[in-house]
Amino acid sequence: WRAPLDRSHITDNPPYRQLVAGTLQMRGFPLVLLLFILAPIAEIWLMIDIGSVIGAGWTVLAIITTAIIGASLVRLQGIGVYSRLNQTASRGEIPAMEMIEGLFLLISGIFLLLPGFITDALGFLMLIPPLRRWLALNAVKHFFIVPNATDRSAQNAPGHDPTIEATTIEGEYRRIDK
Image 1 (cartoon, rainbow, N blue to C red):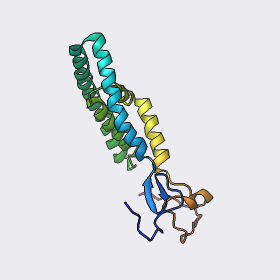
Image 2: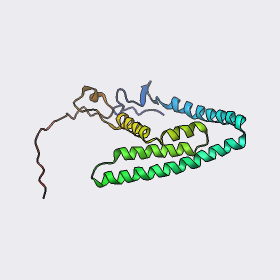
Image 3: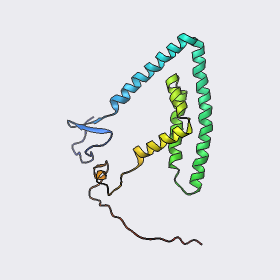
Image 4: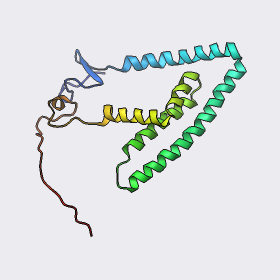
């Protein structure tokens, strides 16, 4: 895939792209490819290893059982996150954390439905509410929080428009209710 000749849309150092000799290359692609190759190999190896100790039938039963238990736990916790999302929205707030926790519950459910013990362990770890909230908070900090416009590092951030200057308007307000 070749980048267009106009490279004004490409910033100096975006987090997921790198300009190399006129082509646009994704940095994380080799890591994702390696993960898609190594993860199934590790899962199959572990299933064979566990199957040689407890037997193939018990291994298949354990995989099916973890999928059933995991799906029911994801459903129960999903109902809780959904009710918190509704409560937050009814207060007039944006339910961002609840939505991201719901995303991690979705990922957890996918991991629990995939056959294998490693994905089951990751899925069950994401079902622990404090760990899931910590993951959601770190995801918000890493992917969604935009640097302050007056910060000099923000001028090099992806999507920064150098023609727009930051303007701070100071003032006071007073809420007048009925």
